[in-house]
Length: 189
Image 1 (cartoon, helix red, strand yellow):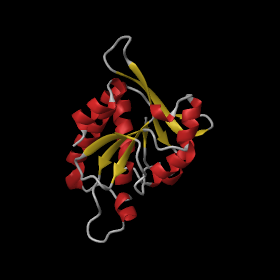
Image 2 (cartoon, rainbow, N blue to C red; image 1 turned 90 degrees about the vertical axis):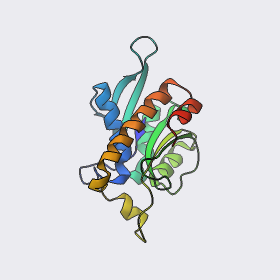
Image 3 (cartoon, one colour; image 1 turned 60 degrees about the vertical axis):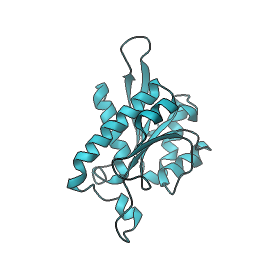
Image 4 (cartoon, rainbow, N blue to C red; image 1 turned 180 degrees about the horizontal axis):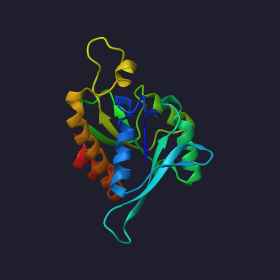
């Protein structure tokens, strides 16, 4: 499971980093810490999802240590390292075309201008992986979408953001334990 974002404290509160917030929440829930993966510009944390016992699923959480438009290399490296196919990948990312406080889970699809998704598609050769899309809405007026995404959430949106990060983390855990259709029925708003 890869949360998309830009590395470093400068970008931490930006709309474009909402994927990082979700993987951080999943790591917190699992009591895990991120650590670098040798030879790959990424850090990972392992957690278990589901009720205790044999049915518990392992979930590798990942954050790229490269910028958004170069995310594909680290994601491809991690897929090779863990010997996974794209069908096992879940990517969490911001989505301009979904209103704030909205969430959508899907399999495959286009990149919709998202540089992180474009980079992953180039590196993996496919867009056929799961996506948890968190709505950040469109920029106001004529503001450039890139400037909007690389700006902090306003203080007035912090409570809603915390709720959406929790919901997105819940959706990931649910998807790992259930099928896409049930997950969409439960979480798509």
